[in-house]
Length: 268
Ligand SMILES: [Zn+2]
Image (cartoon, rainbow, N blue to C red; front, top):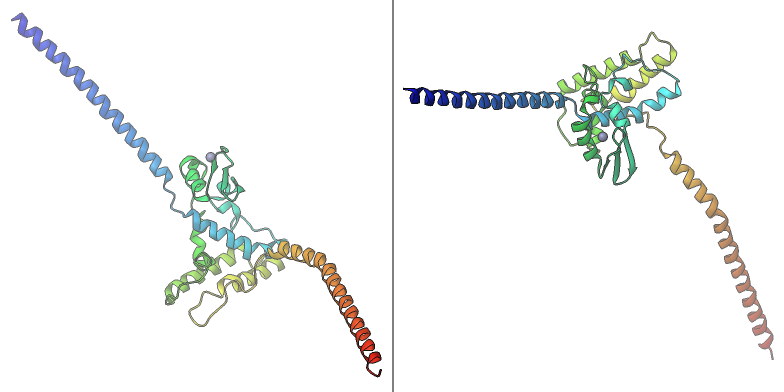
């Protein structure tokens, strides 16, 4: 009798112990899973970094030079304001050291290519993203012609009137919020420019040029280098011309001498 109670007691103890460990493991598993899910959830940013970057570059190139010229301050209500780009802080912490070297400005880690530093930002510094509504620049790509810029040569696709109308509407609403017509001369001037630069091309009828007002004068450096080069080459050019002409003159003089000598010898 005592034997059986002892064995049942032992068995009970064993089962209790097993249950404990099992439940603990399962609990840990579940906890881990929720943490992972949370992480994944936090990582899920429904905004394309690449397209946001393209939109930013377009704004920098085709809009900001004019805004700066007008000395106009874009309000934070405007979706093109730097504060409304959720990747802006990360992009500013991207240090392009060399062609094949990118450095993370937060932790100083180096990368061989931009796509790796992008991945690093996504996995390591995602907590720094300002994920709130309406801060995705990529959402404005339709209005800003990102596809045209990214594909450089736009594929010959049929014009979709509904999509074009939607993009045009988005474009015009950007002009209204960023450059309100009731905010003075500069604002109304930029409003008109924005419509011309970005919105007019949203049409199916006829060919409208993208960014007809041109871009930032990036050529200034090239222009400067070229002018310095010309200034350096100009004296060299004149020197060559001078030497060549001197050579020619000498040549003709020699010829004259020869002919004179020839003429002199002829009569005799
Ligand atoms: Zn880092």
